[in-house]
Length: 325
Ligand code: FES
Ligand code: FE
Image (cartoon, rainbow, N blue to C red; front, side):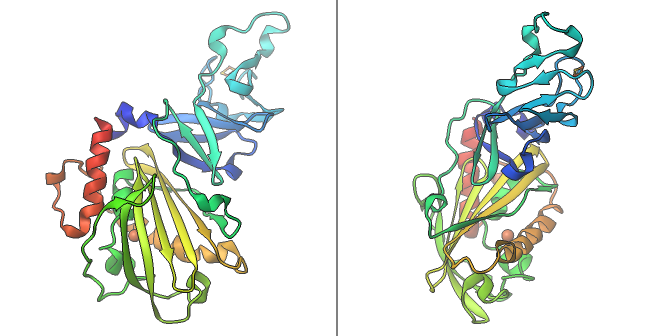
């Protein structure tokens, strides 16, 4: 199982949006483990195995009050840092057994998203400077579950040769099948990728691009941050920047959470939900395709045939295989 690889424990993954938690408890699943997330009275997130240490009831089926999650079975309560703060059947004065405290995992919030790390993070969450730039607004999309492997998703998000096929219903142009030579390079400190120009159908008109033509040119970059985060930047000639962070999280080998976040330096006049209609439709096209492809993408390069347009994926696979050890 790919998701049993211990190296994957030491990275951050998105499991929900911040709004999904408040106050909790929220059940999530990461790398085959069931977890519960709630908000302590300090406002900090707490994440722990979704298993009460008393008789293994799922804490996510309980409730949160005063920053504590209460088990639905016998009412044990757990607060900040997962500490068991109350065992009703013990009355006052009887000590809480040390093993009653929950072994929490790291949890943090960034970009309106909840990120968890089951081990000791070896890399930070990738930086998106637009988050702190007043010229940009952030639009979150919600978290979806895809019945596919995160390896296939990352491969797909780095690939532009599927545009005229998979995305023919949105921005793809049938005759634009040729992919120019791709050179992989560090895009900045956090992402490795490539820059390119692509003609796209301007299906959504001025809402997405600020331009009116039927076909417009996008100046783009696409890159990855190990293990499974991909960023695409779109620059239009009007000066509009549309940045997309694509977050794929392994629920298990063949199931994943998917969410995307957008930053745009537009005039904020079009409601965010309207702006992302097009990106949602594009994501749905990828999802439909990937859910037809079985299993995990082989990491052994010779197990599949790659051509020049697959350079980004080949480079990602090489680095991802090295990360796995
Ligand atoms: Fe949770 Fe008993 S199983 S309190
Ligand atoms: Fe796609």
